[in-house]
Image (cartoon, rainbow, N blue to C red):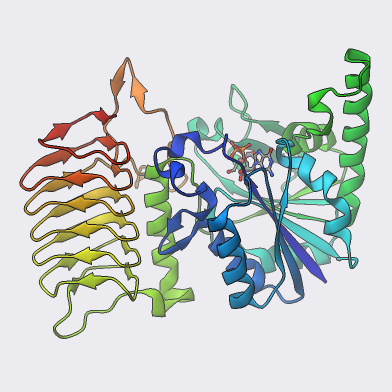
Length: 420
Ligand SMILES: Nc1nc2c(ncn2[C@@H]2O[C@H](COP(=O)(O)OP(=O)(O)O[C@H]3O[C@H](CO)[C@@H](O)[C@H](O)[C@@H]3O)[C@@H](O)[C@H]2O)c(=O)[nH]1
């Protein structure tokens, strides 16, 4: 019997995802037509013997999360529960805090998945390598180029045995081109080292604060407190993958992840990809259209387009490399490229809304998405355009490389601006 835990973080996280994370918790943001963590749940549900999926985070359980959990339980016919940390406990603290729930029923092992990654989740392959040689910690690793590796956990392995000999979280100088994907398979034994860290933290805290209410007592950083500390002791192994993988930190990376997942749908969910039908819109490449969306037959969509529930796409619209969220309207002849159009927003006739992609270098197979900051030398860097929720763009204007905050009604063109 197996279980899975998805670490969904909480409202203080996902700041690079604003203003989109104002409306919906980041783990529920639609990527390739379904909420970000539905991809994780689908992958877990396919592993034979999966008994339960636990989401651990520090969000208040709001309506959106509750509705998502109910729908997912029905769809996958599996118990899927949310366990709330009352303070952020770090990537390992929640696993220790909820250890009884994780170990209830005696699972053979449990997967732990960061919510903010996009992957083809080679969980069965990880399980096979775990069963071949069970160890407390199995990490999924992939390769990155030297510069970008510094943004991730870096793993030095023994190439014969795949034992992790050395682990450094976001090093300041090059350590290894094998990076931690934030996808793990842990044995029940893995909770023992977490308990040791917890007890050590508590003792250290009591020394600092005799009240015993030291706020950091329950916080455990899986990467530094466990992986770095235990590397080289025969407890941590890495399973390497060359499948699709990307982090989802910024809106730009959500658009890139959407492209990766839409590509995957060719194999996993061909029914989710729009097909060209006589009298229907022209489809180029991989496109997702929610069944309730109304798309005019003269619109041209794709590649990499996701159209959400109740969206209206008018005659002559050109839409490419974009996500259009629930209830938005693109009036006739708009051109929308490299953009996320927020919930309920309207783009007026003949308007052009365009962003600049910063996709990984296509000539470097080990390149990943850069989630760098929005500004450099006080200037907004060119990036995808984001329209927050219920934004109104008038007819015949140009919006280029801009971020428009929710509920703004624009009256002219803007380029390279954040419109507050
Ligand atoms: N429940 C809970 N979840 C948390 C908390 N803090 C972070 N998380 C969740 O844990 C995951 C990792 O979040 P970060 O702490 O932001 O780390 P990171 O910068 O994404 O780096 C991690 O992931 C990389 C791969 O994407 C790894 O390369 C790196 O080593 C590390 O594990 C995310 O899904 C986040 O929502 C917390 O206090 N509580």
